Amino acid sequence: MSTGTHPGATQGFAGDFVASCLDAALATGDRIHGITGLQGTGKSTLAAQMAALAAQRGLAVAVLSVDDAYLDRDQRAALAREVHPLLATRGPPGTHDVGLACRTLDALRAGGTVALPRFDKLGDRRLPEPEWPRVGPVDLVLFEGWFLGTSAEPGAALAEPVNALERDEDPDGRWRRYCNDALARDYPALWRRIDHLLFLQGPGFDIVPRWRWQQEQALQARHPHRKAMTREQVERFVQFFERTSRQAMRTLPGIADRTVRLDAERRPL
Image (cartoon, rainbow, N blue to C red; front, side, top):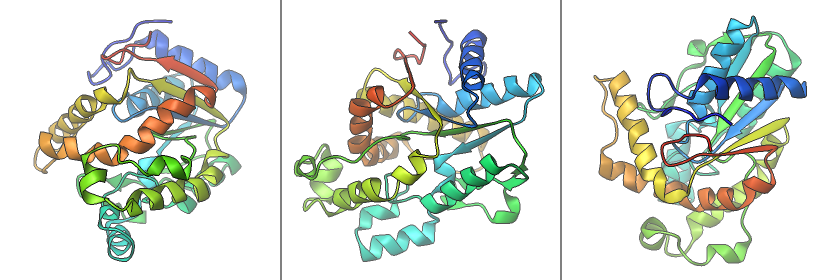
């Protein structure tokens, strides 16, 4: 397998690696390909590079992220009032409109023109539907997300907190039980729509805060007039994802159709 350059850089992954991923996706004959991996592994970078290469070959590709199906801020605020304050923060299972994601993938599979939902992360809100890009029909769908295919944990595993956020802000485990129940109940229907899953396997969760901070800096650079998270805010934010991330690392190598290990600089090994 090729080495790759730093996906945070403008050139992203090495061209031969991108080509190998696209060739593998096309060879299956499947329509919907998932790309999963912990925060900051380069999923969206790889998907964009694969889509660009496909376009050079005359193929039409739609790229969708599970992040585009976040519940809007008002919906999460209602969950925060009714269930647990931590549900105001987007990201963990239970903070997505799974039905929207399923309907979008189904429409893409069926052909025709489809409006792709889009979420404004700096504004923390879903863009209005008239602003969604319209695509289709497409030859290939690249669906990326940080926990695609991940299963729920056994209930007993939720007893002990995994970090300071859970210990201090979810002492009775209500928030993590809600997220785990949602992962067990709602998300399998979405995972079943993925025909083929690629897992970008980073070296471990400890690298995620650095990778996620690099993402935030890149986001700020693209939108200098808008306020991104501080380093301290990023350190807290990634704790929302830690439990499910660790479950993903345990289970995805046995679930994904293809696993690619990455080093600390996101280079394929």
